[in-house]
Image (cartoon, rainbow, N blue to C red; front, side):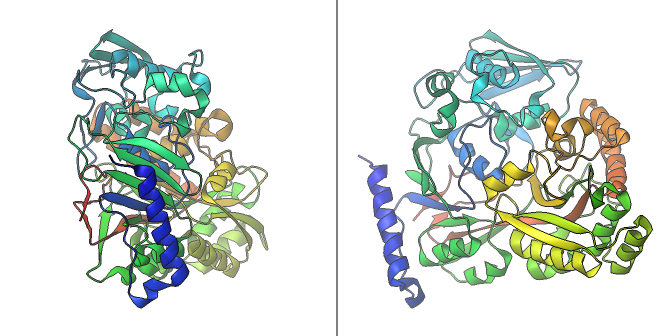
Length: 525
């Protein structure tokens, strides 16, 4: 019988032995256990409850524990059936009806039926639901158009929307739409995030804080049995330490390899995987108070930062300079006429002079490492130097990833002038709707941490998400991008090409444009 606890004890002992004896430098590598995949994560997860999670770091675990009604096709951002076998949409675009698989159970043995689906969405959206207090539900914005969820019969569930909502299917495929066991939520309450139960290719075994999350194979998985018996997710916050663990054989795979370290994995013992996706790395500017409440000062910051040097020197060419808030991966909605702010320190100084700002002191929040944040400390230091060169006095404050989110997501008012941030999204609607609308200010439940507000942007975003005509949506998004670029609520830095490295023992692994981590088909020799 497979004993996952014993496997992990053996694994840990091997890692400690290698690190303590320094054998890696002598060319002798630790070997992780056969048929167990060990993944180096960038941070400790915050929760394993899909309805409460916002970070891609956590999503990468969730996608292997749960399924949604639909999922993204392999290698694409289009959706296909998952727990639902099919769906239909009413002529007015306001009712979606899903037919469910009848032979799927949660890992605790309870049935996946229409009532279970309804429970998940009602818990998130209905404040009077008996298990609404298991939240908070920060990405419930994704499903704010839902007016009613009905269990038509055991295998049929319908969603009635309050208006046509174009991103609905895509949002159902996002981790926030994953379906959890109602029985397990009722049993664990607010602690469900530490005791997750889904339907995925792997089942939850254990979570030891700051050490590991262990999943074991679900031998009854509806979509075929996984290629490994277990997956161990190890949080290793420091990028250099993750690299050392990868080189020593302490982990089989790591995501978000520091760009300066990629060359260390060029040999036959490793495989480097890259995949472009809808990513934007930016600096949130506090538009409510302080120097950045002035649009000219925000524009000056965009001119002052040498993004080309950051992309080429810090990120080693693993990204492209960002021109605005929408990643070019959304080709149909991307405004190709936008040009990135050029590096022009003289223009920055002139704008600061026009704004009457000199020797402004800035507090800059930087994370030590986190979801899609590239090489945040090195980037933050480069940005600090560029801003100093045009007259800003910048103080950097660094935080561990989850602490960083706790400081930034509630808003920068009274705390900081700017903060690093990265988003990897599933639809052109997601990032601007959650982080640029006036109604997305933190005190209203959104992620507009810099308090940017422009009524025209609000109008365009509301119109785009309710249009069922993709060409019209594209026109609205392109106009929005022009306005936001000019208003400069952010410094638009880079669009990243994600990367991962695996040992030569790992087979059948690929990265996804969604930036999610799918491990069912991965095997290890």
